[in-house]
Image (cartoon, rainbow, N blue to C red; front, side):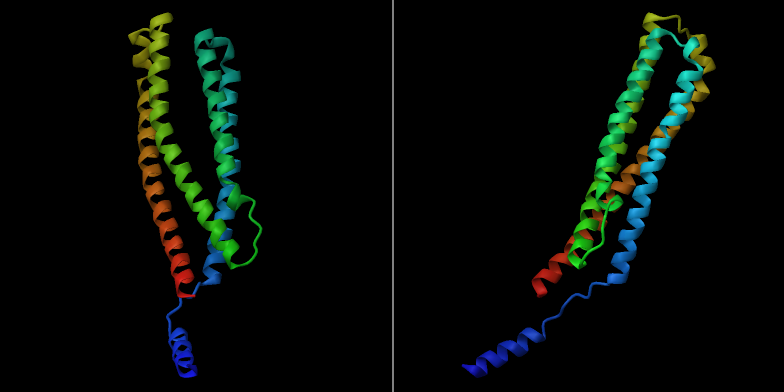
Length: 194
């Protein structure tokens, strides 16, 4: 009986274990924390030019366009609040033991995936909103083809930016999902080896 116990003990001790590089994990989480905090600040600062343009051109805006733009800023602010909530894991992280590092990083990678997907889909929704606003202006106001021709370069720039941002967000969503799966796999191997 003790011979079997000794054999099992020796076999157990020979099992391979995954080494978790704490320095790499700490560095990744701290980098995520800095990045999430910077993103929160930049996201909030993105409202400054939009509100400034709205105030600076208020007298020139029709009531329809002003209403559309105010609605757009309000909806964008709701999105900002949701994205800020998704950034909370890394942005507000306190560093504890190894499992806390791994759990926090996994949660934030999943949330980064959600943020990237939301960004991807909001690019499409922004394009639809732009077409809807232009359509309403053409139907209810004096927005002629001449007006459209004068603003075509701005529209091309906006559409190019939306498409580029959509492609970038799609690639980031894939990357964050892949990183999450790698980290989850590392955690699962560590749990099964122990």
